[in-house]
Image (cartoon, rainbow over all chains, first blue to last red; front, side):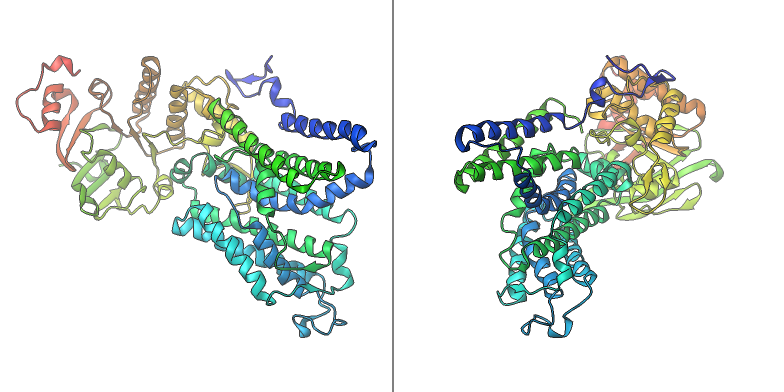
Length: 340
Length: 260
């Protein structure tokens, strides 16, 4: 059942399985989960879960923010790293962006002299601050040898502290009208999907992606192949930080407020989405398309439990079980040869 | 004395200390163009340490190195590769989650469009070139699109060797290339090494397998306790003499046939 194409005695084609969508098994999990809620919906709530455009829109909108973060986390985990600081970085970068998006009508703006700025200023400020904090993560990991778990744990605490320090704990609101556009309607979804496509391309077709997979697969091999491991790690964490900054801009625009407590536990949702989407915590394997489906699975579960009127603590218990199941599946796959 | 023009690699008093551990002491080594030599020695004799210094994986504590007559200092494996020194490492420096062309071209990808780290890969060209390279070395790999992690140890080693042999290298260094291979796979690798000899590509082979050493190389360098203790022409010595040099014990340890 393999394709017959071969040249010079060497087969270069994959078996028929190659041509199936790579994430078909995860897609089936998504459809199965939605189907379970659909059936339960008719029995318990007496209405459809899936065929409700309003609900679907809310699921997608809610998950766009986690989705943008999860894209950054996907490439880090492919590189055999981890990032626990995304939620805290989102909180701080959101404060920075929001403080530059305030209107002059509000007399107690964070920077009274910097009100009514063009919309690009807060957007770039948020993303830039994300780059900086992501770069600090990457620099610590690459140059000091601190394990990613510890370095980003430090950033988790430090960035949350920065977010509180920035306005002494007060929230930031009263934005210029344009700023609200980024979080309105379908725009967050468009931003999420555009970012996903861009990073899918980067990981699949560029040197950036090749080196990310190579380092995650065998760092020693990548080093002797002449790849500048440290520089690449800094770059990957920096770009991830930029994505957290982008997510922060979208989040503050959607909620029309920035507060130091924002993004709490987003890092775990993002990691969960990545792992559910088939990216291996061991590194070297994973895809953005899988992460998109992973994000949708999380969204369906959260929304489904709300729909059925089941308490959020049950949602967290189920999420926890799914994450552990995903990791166990990953280990099983690793022990029995996986494929990227 | 060697004619300087014939020498491709020379080290003078190359020394490597790891803190208080003297892993390599004043190694004076020469390799002529087209020559195939073996480095032998017991575990901890300094063989791999020596190779790590000349391939830029580590930097020597002191001493000088000359490649093609010029003094060189390699600060990274990439610099050594750019100079034309290719290595096949003991621990199979391959990425299991990448396919054959991705491994062959890792660190020197063919590009469609150059833009620093975001350069776009020319996968088609790499696949074509990979086929050419493997055909040249007569290596049998069932499917080049498979991940290297899905292949047998022999196929993986062949990929690693063909990576070294395929990039117009001026010197190839192999550290225990057949240590983990079966009989048939070992023969395949040895045939590749013989092919390199015919092509005139110089080779440094580190091996514990004296049968293989005598079969494949012109000269044998013996290391003991971080020092070079001798260099002998392979055709003018025997296994017993080499064992004596490796162990430092004189007067034949066993019958020579048992070593070869």
